[in-house]
Structure formats: C-alpha cells, structure tokens
Length: 130
Image 1 (cartoon, one colour):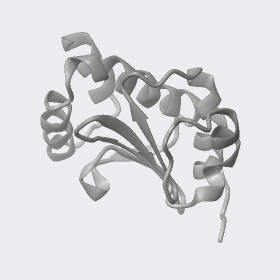
Image 2 (image 1 turned 90 degrees about the horizontal axis):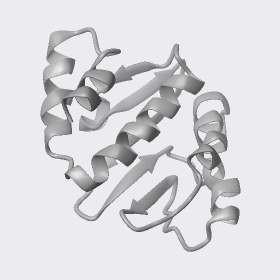
Image 3 (image 1 turned 135 degrees about the horizontal axis):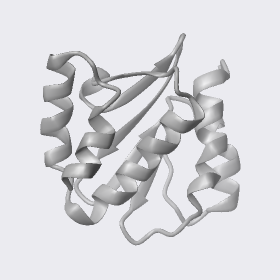
Image 4 (image 1 turned 120 degrees about the vertical axis):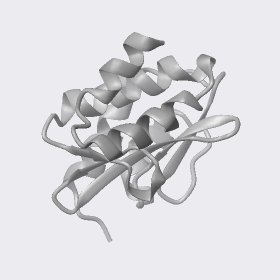
C-alpha cells in the first residue's frame, strides 16, 4: 500500500493538497485501491500535463478548462466528467456498468479493460461539449 500511495502522491507538490490526498487515499478500501491507482495512473500517462488537485474534495485532473475526477464511494469508484457525451463509447461497450449524467460508477466486481477508459479520459480532457 505504501508504494501505491507514493506513486499517487508524486504529482502533488503542494503540501496542503498532498495532505488532503493522503487522507483521502487512506480511506479507500484495500480491495478498491489497485483499481483506483490504475485509473489514476492511466490519466497521468495519457495526460502528463494535467494538473492534479483536490478540487470538489476528490482527486481531480484539470487541463485548461477541461477536467476529470475520481471518487471513492461506499460501494464503488466513480469517474466524473460532467457530460454524458464523454461516456458514450464506454457505455456502448459496457452497458451493464452503471453510468449517470457524466459519471461512471464502477463496482468492485465490475469487469472491463482499463484501456477502454482512454476514450472517456481523452474526451473529458480535450473536448468542449454542450
């Protein structure tokens, strides 16, 4: 768990943000942490210039006016994009994974290919949709 925390905390340079993220990460259940870390790492791999923060009190990545956020919920992880159009391709591939208006709710037992989130992340951080 310590290595995962170090990997995630590395991009957070400001001490207040780092402390908030550290506290946030400690509350993620162990069975969900690996998936959280994988999605977090995928975002940073695809968009290394995205600015991580704790905006909205959850790990949020901003690139210009665009953003995507990850949240640990009681029984799942959520990926927030603020627009359902960002999710269209993923929803088509995985109709059984619950989605909302601009968010994906990934339960611990949901299965999917991590790289299938590429289109969601790319759309959220590059496309202006109305």
